[in-house]
Length: 567
Image 1 (tube, rainbow, N blue to C red):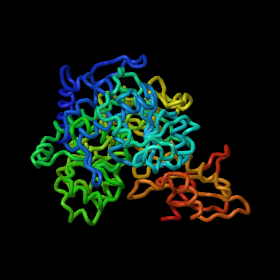
Image 2: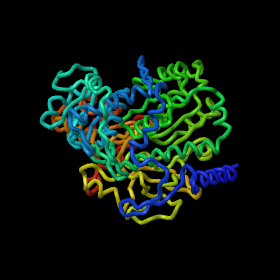
Image 3: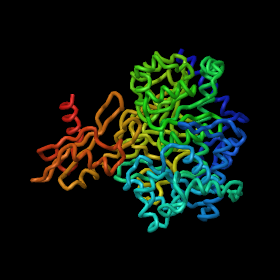
Image 4: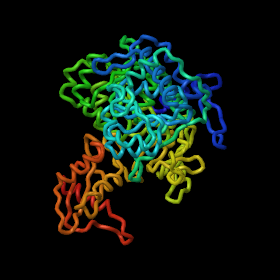
């Protein structure tokens, strides 16, 4: 069967990318390098999203009692765009930051800024004051569009930074901010200034946790975003051609394509592969107010959701819920897994609970616009332990510690090159130089590509904890803990967890004569960082933390000791 399936995949691949085909490939000169691209992909976000206007009054997004049509979303976006340009002077190249929980207004703000050629900078809506201020200082937006919860912590700093605020759910003039609702009302029917966007023009700054204590802003071009979405379409077409029985069953069900959305819009997966992908294809989105597997099941039944894309931890919680067996999930026929490695238990649950589902996985990073490898349907179940098959427009190699290219199949650091790779880190030349090498992005992940073009991730170089798909910089958490007056030194690291993949743990040594409880240290972090960055375990050590002769903390030793004591 494997040889037959691979032949089917190869045939479909060639048909889809052939001359004159929808996903025809060509080479383009990008930053002095000839790279493969999808010839027919949109050239910029305005071109990419314009066809979605034809869906008119069809329902697009559902959130609690709100039901927005495509027409309403574009009407609000156009009205807001006219005011961003006319009242605040936003022009091509300016930054517009967005920080609010998932809601339709977030989407309207994104479309409004993009239509003006502004560079959109989504900020971590789970972040606390320090994290929001870092994003605002780094991106230096002309306008900050937010909800009250993301406005209040930074309101006193905006004037000094020269940033105007547009806030939802508030009246004009409150705290010196403009009202989102009043701007939309004032801009209704007004023209949006025309703008010319070239493929190389910047489009997006997405913040990603790196090995430093501060998130870096990955700057992507219009081309990079559009090519990533074209590849998403390619993967869907490939899955359809190689899993025709599943596709036929989905179409025969009569359910309108509807995605249950529980990942944040400030993530590359939520922004590009759920919001933008759904918008341009007419797919309906049902948003959760917050992640709760029981509420998710209720929404699946009530709204007849056909697909759910989330981290493996979220899918595990959904399928292992006692309510799953008694909830009508007959409409649910597709799962998208991303963000971390997929445990065998999750794969087994998908197979047993939804044997005819169209499931898929992928590998990518914020710096590559989520693109590296992917597989869906039969291709996914062929090698469920992999992170997918390489994309037609992405080159992947592995290198050793010295940066020497390794033969295919040999494990090393994964480097990626292609039109979706970021232009660089915003206002961070040093950080950019550390990860971009002649167009190759050094991922910090250890893995290999097998003979059939499937990629396997086996480890990480970067000291990042992957908690249910949320990347946590241990350096950032260590810096937060060390700011406590009682802490002398700290080491943070990940521990395996069956549900979340990894959880964060920290070992702390207090200063001589100082006192602090584990609960006090947990509260210290919780007051300063997003909730998912709060360690699940804080261990106070009476001894100096182990270090090697050069003074580097021996985290592996600490991790092994803590794991042993907790087991």
